[in-house]
Image (cartoon, rainbow, N blue to C red; front, side, top):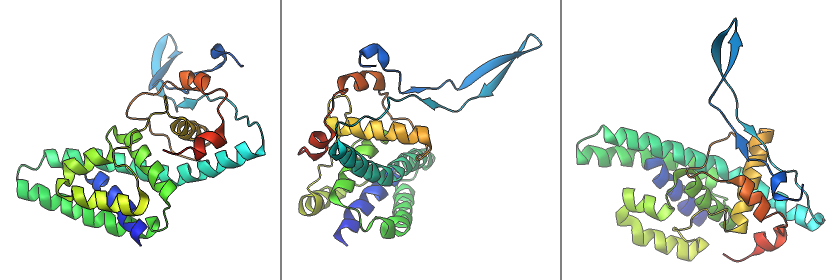
Length: 232
């Protein structure tokens, strides 16, 4: 039940508020509007995003086992992170229309209570690793850390949050998503792009652009077991 409190409250707060470099292609190619000619006239057509990622290659079966174990966790937590980003955008738009401070507080509380009831049962079995990835993914989607979001919307709960994370998950609420420098984060990004391509997840771009071509080259010899088991 302690897990419910941490992850549930995290979401509530957010809802409120070939071997060479040239081999590697861009992670995605997406033009919102492409066009074609009809009788010397132009017409636009919306195209779905195309994700070009390098094939998965593992040095041994142990590497593969760790990768797909991590993939299972990422696929489980990603939808909550994207929902957090969507709710945060919606909340900011709604609050911008509310001038009264008391009405703003009531609106935030109403949304918080709704989200607690909506997600508590789904999140009660979330593990420490899942919680850590969720916090990273929320930063990927919103551009803000959990700490910053709590500070903005629930500043009075700062001590409460520190007590929970120190006691249960020992997760830093200031954790950021840096696939360009953190091997675990690169693996998460690689998992996401493969899942976008095969339809396992609905794509949502990162808040900050990510050059996956450069990342693929940098991590071309990555040791999945070493990175996934490394201490944060």
